[in-house]
Every structure is written in structure tokens, then in C-alpha cells.
Amino acid sequence: MPPYALRMERIEIHTTTSGAEELAYVTATLYVDDGENLDQQVSELEGDLFRDRTLYVGSISTQPALRGQGFATRLLVHAIEVVGARTVQAHIVNGEADAVFAKARALTTDVEFDLP
Image (cartoon, rainbow, N blue to C red; front, side, top):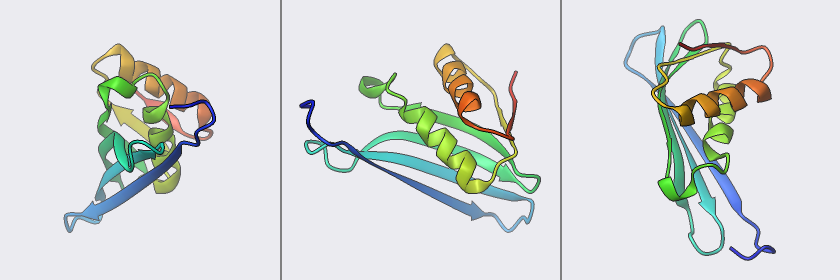
């Protein structure tokens, strides 16, 4: 991407329920339009939101070629803010996920991260 190019990002967050009042399913996707790749899906999050405003992150991923650019962190922080999460939980499976949660923790206030 040329240094003068403007990269636009769009985040979509959807919540759905299964009829249970205490639980909503959360999906969030970050798209990029950099002038070359229009509306490219870059990062995706799936999880559950419980009535007590606990966001359980089941998975968060970024396209391999685009990792390390902060997309997953921006997506996670945005999802936390939009759904009003007070606690974030996850089963961390690798160092990349640890780094995303550490960066998100530093960028949020009044949110507890309950991680193993």
C-alpha cells in the first residue's frame, strides 16, 4: 500500500439470542478497504455475552498475512465498548492471543479481564 493511501476500516457487530434471556451470541468482523482490497475481511471475533455483562471470547482471529498490525486488538476493544462488557473471559491458546488481550486491557477502563 502506498504511504499516502488512506486505509478505511469498518467493524460490524451482531448479537443474537437463542431465546434465553441471560445469553446473547456475539459476532464481530473488521473489514478493510485500502483501495486495492475492497471490503476485505481481516479479523473476526465470536463469543457469548451473559446478562452480567461478561463477554466470553470463544475465538478471535486475523488473516495470517495481516497479523501484528493491531486489527484483532481494535476489534476486541470495539466489541467490549459496544456490548458494554464489564468482564472479559477467554481460554487463551497461544502467545498471539495473550498479546491481544494484554493490549486490549491497556486500552480499556473499568473492564476486568478474567483470563487463565
